[in-house]
Length: 149
Image 1 (spheres, helix red, strand yellow):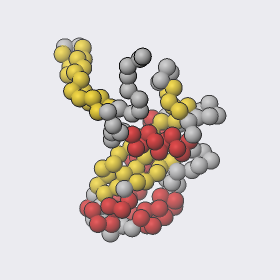
Image 2 (spheres, helix red, strand yellow):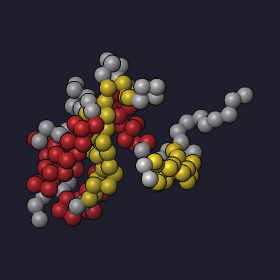
Image 3 (cartoon, rainbow, N blue to C red):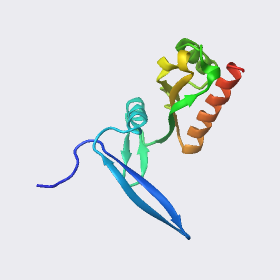
Image 4 (spheres, helix red, strand yellow):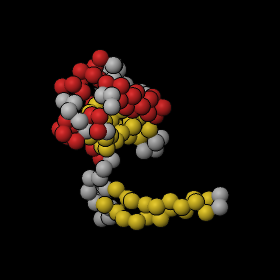
């Protein structure tokens, strides 16, 4: 019988630079879903792809690859009072909303905390990490412009 883990797990670690080298120290193993599970599952459910651990890339059924950039802690007092419907309308008008045909764009979550706390989460999906980060930065810029001080 092989020993191992069935399901998801996460490893918390600390990395310290010593001279020109990096030393990695495992701190904790979490045999449960962690903070990175939710964005990855959104990517997986939206694209029907899977992570190719040998190549280190996420591949969709059509052979294209996708990356994501995500946060569950985008917060600004200016966003308080913004409704989920406002958020969706703003994202559509600014061409940010996830496009199922292109399989790229921004998906929001935790929008129930938006109006009261000014907090939300988002997963930005794109063909490469630079585009995914650009979606994130554009989203923040658009929200800040739509909700001035």
